[in-house]
Length: 431
Image 1 (cartoon, rainbow, N blue to C red):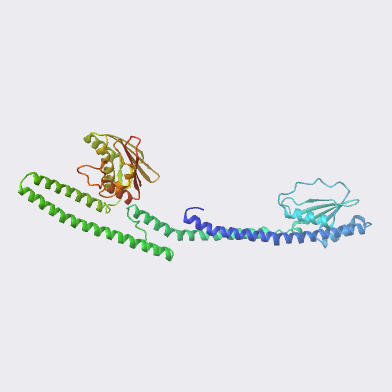
Image 2 (cartoon, rainbow, N blue to C red):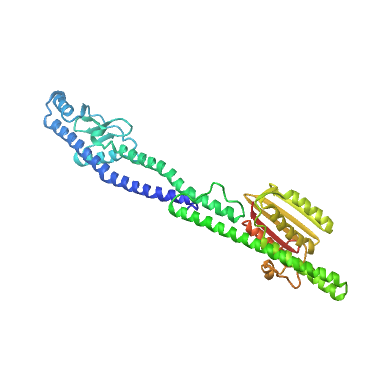
């Protein structure tokens, strides 16, 4: 079965029509066409048998003029009495000719004499030759006398009306499918963090309209919830930063000593964790999608590698421009590559942009992460005891933020073993 709804709907419409027409055509050919042809052929054969009976009953009729006249005037058959020459050789039998089969069978059954039959071709005349004792009877009959010749008209009407109905049904069916496709495109755009198409509105059948209205309401609720969360976090950030600023001011007034140094370090850690948490919770969801230049970003990575005294190799296959949320995606790549810079000496970044998808593979020669911990490191504030994401300034949110951004784009991040001996991070997002 095809996967697309439009193709399946066409099959649902076309398949029963073809099946019904096939059954009707078979029944018509079996019951009507064959029966009518059989009766017509029987009638023609009876007329020929009567003519043979007349010829043999009145053999002294000179030239058989009366028999020829009666056959032409009363039976609509043109006959000739020929010398007793051998009958022509049998011609090739047609692959499918109901007239040839039935007429041959009736001549054999009713007359039972050697005969030669010619029904091949598009001629309206059928020629029959029958071997008599001392002569050959040649009969010319119209094809319509022995054959139901109007059958093709029925088939043409049946096929023609079906094509007309399909030509009418296909556009209507397409109009019914189009709202569902628009709804799918809107949902896909929302899942990728992009703006909903401007021309989208609930259309089509009642069920499709209800689904469209439900999607719009769901999208509005989610956006409203995100806005409320962002506003709340902004207020919390302002209040907590005010308190931390007071702490710093009081410690500065108290003077520098061993106790205040420890407290000052704790305040810095709290502020770093607060900033990381707010950045994670905010998730850059309010940013609109735009163009992001991978080649320019790789140049920045090269400059950063020089500052950190690291070695980086980058490669790009496909178009350098991708359609993502630029700031969020830059942060995603910066988190992953920065993590590699922190714990490895050599880093390789390979990007492939093909068929609407961007796959970025980042390899390094660092200590790596155990396989059983590779999913846990994506949890917020999770830090390994002996791992690459543990240092004095880390908050355990880098990978969590990166995956959150990737999934908001409709993609994901996975971790694997790197051929370089360290960790491989694979980022795959639609772009």
